[in-house]
Image (tube, rainbow, N blue to C red):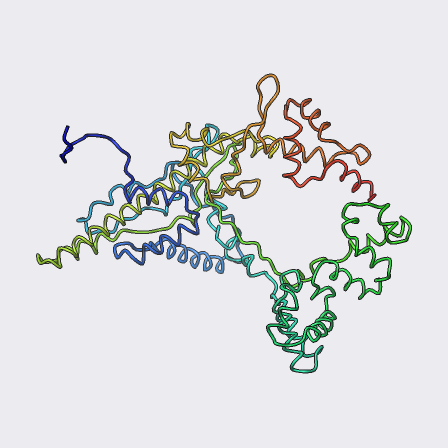
Length: 521
């Protein structure tokens, strides 16, 4: 049979992801900060997209009106009514679905002024009161505008480098040595240790190693003691020397810190040449020192987590959910501008390209608005189901958390597991028990008792941690004993599972805990 080229037509089905679908999937997994950056880029690139500032202006007007009313009624204070709640839990605006109509001459508005609210189970009310959350802001201020944000209460920060540079002139006399001192300051890490080695400094500055050593000795006299050390041993020695406690026995103890870490009392007594009581006193002195003196200059400001979903209890015992309006980008499609430009286009080749460009911009803008709308509704739907299934956690704590996997949520809301995974990534919920990432509420199942009951891994970890905290110092619980206690409570787990959970919780072994709680080494 001869091989010849030919044309065939075949019919088949395949899943093709359009750019619009890829955009919708991308928006699902973005955090609120990443989403804001993405929308800002689209606003810069698409002339038909506009930022909706009506709500900002309305809030400012309401604030000014409230301030003026407060000034007029200072002597006659009365009860103020809470903001009215939405009429129903389904306040999602369907205006995004009409975004393709471009000849109306009106700007399309995805009505984010109405807050997204939802019930989370049959015990939730059909309305959600927004009182208490209208003043939620990225600065963490719940109480309105009268109180300053947490960032405004921070102390002025003085960096370690700025402080040490101010000390160089008082410690070192010659300009040459000051140059070496500044170079040493630049090598300090966050803990206050010299990193990189002083031989590299000598080579970089073209000076002798002895000169760098001499300047280092002078710089080690600054406060707080322990700065400019090259390792932990030298850091502790500098602090003990400043206290006039660096005797030969203490120096030998510093030379054998590994024995101290292993609590080997007999070996320390033999090495240091003192009795057990002296060893305990020396170890107590070392424990009172600061192994990282550079932390005195480090101001770690905890970054505020802005929740995507806000949850609160209602009087009838249920839960009310609403999306945080601060995380919802407010954008409009300017159909009026599209109509005006379309009417002034001619029939030449350049006008055809311009028209095609405008149509692409309009389609992209409409799809972005719809994607934002769909993202908001999906987050609320997934969050509502999580609250419904983890109701016992919100009422009793982590010990009552139920096993939950992505499939459990996906089957109920009729979505794919990958969609639920994207929705729960980098999304946070503010609850009466604190702010949690949505991923936190998913926990694997650990074998239960003979009746088939199961516990979540988080609940088992919590129970193990509670057992260890409450154990008698004279009767330290071994892993085998913890397994027996868990079985008596209907939790059937293996010893290796207990050991794995204990390590994950940062709990030492029974031997180590016995030494720590008895005060021995």
